[in-house]
Image (cartoon, rainbow, N blue to C red; front, side, top):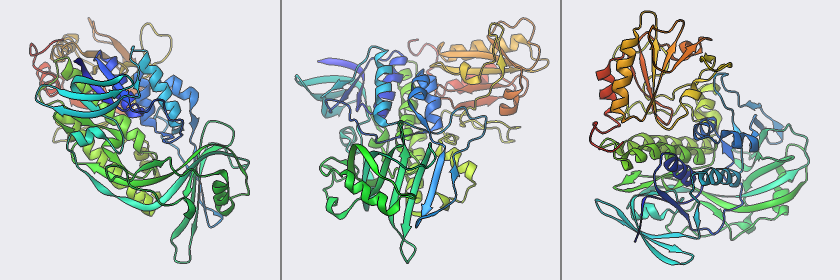
Length: 544
């Protein structure tokens, strides 16, 4: 019987992210998908700035930026009249902007990235069953060559709304379905609306209810959009999924170009003709959330854990973050250096995120984004997934009772900053350049009077506590401490001081997923060791 550390079920963006991050950390894994070939549908097309940050850390942001197009904003029209233009403007310190990229391109880029680690997707291979005990999961696979029995230490279900892993784990998936049906089409149009902007055109009846809608998202190409709209009666109907979950594309009823043109004739803000229909489908939307993201050695991520309206392009991006969050933790456990309860933090951190995303997208689908009481910048930062945080995580050391002088608090995303200089680089660097590795990062801030010996002691204790899986950098404002033997960068432009409000001798622990685990002032070896014990097994308890 074949054996593997981790079996990933489903080769969409979520499963590919999980597999790539496991392989980046040296974990033996297999990834399977029941489809014989990738689907050439532009399903999930919105790529959030936070996802681009993760892709940068993975080493694939350049390829994504080469393929994607900017999402600059949205043009709103109601009953034929133009409304306010929404600009997707983010603060200048955010390194990436909103983008659009067809899901099939995202999957191709991730598949190529994964192949760089020597792992390929096993297509035409389906999970038939998975039974677990305390030590392993026994999986039965249907492959192109017959049935295979496999023993895996862990299984990650990234197999969508009708997840077989979720059913094997005995997880509930409570929620409901929207009564409306929609259709999608990938087309080109000949209007002269500005490029890079989505279009939302709606019609309200005499009672003020929206009874017709058209949403267009720009895609790479010339005046090419993925359009979604209400389905005409002749294409309506359709049955629930095999597990009673109604969600996703329905390949049985395919809209034609004339169906899309009919909607454009009613709702397009300017007369236009659609052409070059690449693909189309009808689809239904549900909103559901699992009760738990894990049962023993079985995990779920992405649509297997949460489904919701596509408002704000949150689904795929949330799933990618699920996978990224889980992979580094699972890798530590597989290597024998993770703390005993480390994997429990996946549920603790990601379930509240899924709950918030499902609730918010349902609310926005019913009442509109403008019904959100927050200011536009906050709304956009949340849509960009830059406000996701884990302040209540068991892995995070909370801020002290008296608060902090400024900057991120433990559990926040660690912000980027520019203008760092290093001895051997004739150009300024970003903080993200220092955080890009697969390990935890310890940032030590040396102010006036900070002794090199104190920094060395903190670095040595933290490195030991993390089983060597830690990068250490000292950040200085002016002169470095005498005798410093650690990697160092100077905050020449003052951007680190502005973003983090550090105090002399303070330590910042940043996790592999770019979140701040703790701030310690003054930094002491025993405090850093105790903090890292939340994540790592005691020294000598596992392999390195």
